[in-house]
Amino acid sequence: MKNNEIRDINLAPSGRQKIEWVKNNMPLLRGLEEEYGASKPFLGVKISLSVHLEAKTAYLCEVLASAGADMSVTGSNVLSTQDDVAAGLAAAGMKVFAYHNASAEEYAGHIEMTLAHKPNIIIDDGGDLVGMLHGKRPDLAENVLGGCEETTTGIIRLKAMEREGLLKFPMVAVNDADCKHLFDNRYGTGQSVWDSIMHNTNLIVASKTVVVAGYGWCSRGIAMRAAALGASVIVTEISPVKAIEARMDGFAVMPMAEAAPLGDIFVTATGCAHTITTAHMLTMKHGAILCNAGHFNVELDMDDLESIAAEKRESRQNIMGYLLPNGRRIHVIAEGRLVNIAASNGHPAEIMDMSFAVQFLSALYILRNHGKLEKRVIDVSAEIDDLVARRTLAARGIRIDVLTSEQEKYLNSWRV
Image (tube, rainbow, N blue to C red; front, side):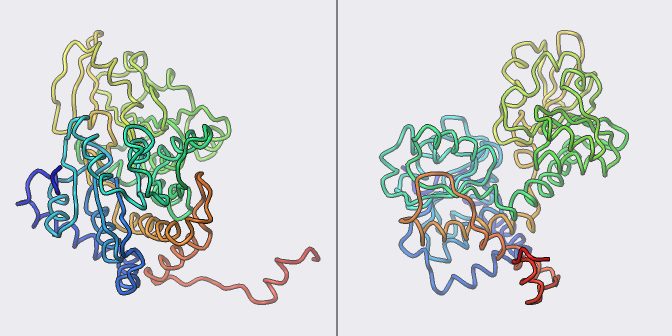
């Protein structure tokens, strides 16, 4: 096993430049680096991390290392790793196992290499570390105190394991923290998805019809930003409550079968397989653009599309065109993988500053409380959410009101 499996160490200067840029725009992580760099609470603690390996993730790794952690790092998607950032981390002495456009076999190998140092804490994005620790390599789980999960998709997998009584250690549901999903999922996804679509297509959004599959927090952000850019938005949903919410937010709501012939741009963010099938694709307009903002590349039925396409050719960098049997051509961005990170730079630095501050503090929570925690999915503590929110406000120079003692007494009393 190589100490570092990366493509080209000569790319390190470019990677370091990217890391320095995000560092300058991530005040919460800078504060944690300063606060815990001296006390080093993670000294002697091994952390394995699998998160989209770009500059913001790299800086989180460096902050954890500055706090004493022995880091072993990989990406969480075969297209989202930025080779120069991976090289920049490796050049600084960190164990890095990732490169862009790895095969499925190579990616699985990188996950296994990242776990080979027998971690005490894991930080996961989508559940691939946990999956390997409970599947192919359970022997590497013996020292794990617990871990953190970044995504909705990963938490779905963890809760399924918990229901079956299989989860070997506690996992903090970082995604469900208010300071994560309310901002990262909504505003981060909303901006980064459209950054990617506009950059990769070089087409206008205004005047187009955008179909957003799902209306969770990520989809809310995608729909909101599409409307702000001048699009007409259709939402598809399976939840009656979320469907009502989407309608009251001003969007049309209908089944995908009805939306498919109307849309110009389709974005999925449901966390479920086959949200858009070839039956839907065959009714779409000539030139329709499809992409996915869910963690795994299963929401667009790419296997069936590949099988029915009369022709497949690159329409533009990161965009593949498929000629359908009916003579229409549709276009898929980033192979149906996470459009905002597989074909762009992911969420803004300031948004990930909040999410990664929650990650750091949740990992510290695991370290300090693991003996008291059950082997299940646990919530981020209210104290962590409150601390991250208050530090975010302070970093932006925003002050808020404080309850008086009289108000506190009123709120804690049943008497009016």
